Amino acid sequence: MFPKLLRYQFLTISFLITIQLTACGESGSSYTSEKDTIGYNNGLEGYLYYSAADKYYELDLESGIARTLWSDADGDFWTITPSFDGQEFAVTMDDGIDKSRLVIIDRQGDILSKVVDKITLSGKAEISPDGELIAVLQQYYGSKPDRVPIFNRNGNIIQTYASDGINQIKGYTWHSDSSLFITENDSIFSAKPRTSEAPSLIKQFPGKLVSSINISRNGKQLAFVLANNADESEYHIYTSNLDGRNMRQLTDAEFASQGSPSWSPDGKFIALRHHVSDDMSGGSAHGTCPTIYIVRNDIPTVDLSQGETKEVFRLKRKDKKLTLPQPICAYSGIYWFGKPVSSALLQSPVKTNRFIDMEDGTVVENKTLLQWEKSGRARIQPACAAL
Image 1: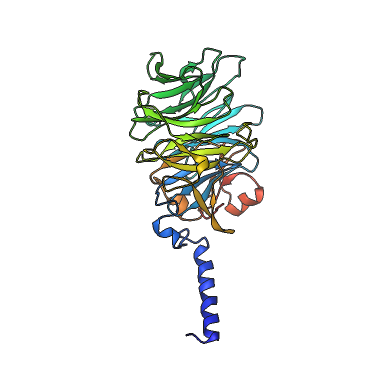
Image 2 (image 1 turned 60 degrees about the vertical axis):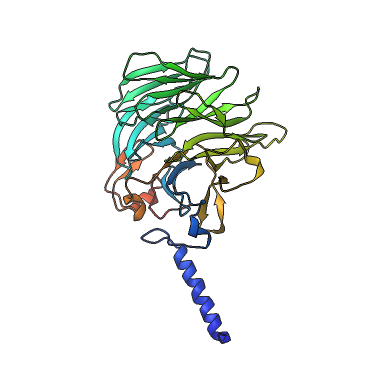
């Protein structure tokens, strides 16, 4: 037995060590706990990108640490989408005159290409796997047909896919062979932007609405969102082969919807957003903050209202202010990568005088980080910034 004074000193030292380990240091966080011995999120590894409010995050699944990669306090950026290899990001921004601009930036925030500005953009911009083309969405809500123009790096449109003027285009994603999958109303199409061929029908769902779509890394499976009921207030995740066969429902939940599916690098899991209706009698499912769930792909249809298991669980992050793991609130697309291609931005604070100005899409040079902070302008956050 320790004498009383020694026990007190031992506990005090242990407490201080715990605080030190949870602090943000040069090598990130070295926090450990009994829970972390099997990984913070049931042993999953890799990095998940998502946005919440006016910030864009990278989450280390194994450690539970989320770092702020970009922030726009003025709400100027709309979407940020990583490229197929994670080396670049397509950024759509408000240009201040009810139009948008599209730029491609690298992990350090340097602008690689100003693709186009002063145009109407209605959603994400996706870079093709070979890095040469960018697909965007233009929705006009009935005034004229929706369009998916395909830009090259110089801002020239090389191809455009338009709806019939009645149905809406809801989603699109690239296949590893650089074909483009597009969802329009009740159908999924496949297109080859570098040819003049018309899009080919993959699958049709009469009387239903298909929206977000994602393709597995091996290029063999689809995950997409399908409206289940007549008033389209509930959406759930389905999977199928690339040709639309062997379709099955992955998720379900009464008075709730799931969206933004993203395959894990090994194809065994799907990350998704799950949001529950405020009106439990069947009203809108957009009243609460959507949380990110992980669902194993090879299990029967799962009701997300029935609790969590090792195969179905809410993704969690560490919070410097709170002791318990916190569910993640995400408002837009989710992207899952095996590992970051470059860890330079994540392993140390920003050591550069080049920052992306989210107000006009330019790179501001010859400013220190302190000067940039005092200006109140949007910038890349230091590596230690966390939720």
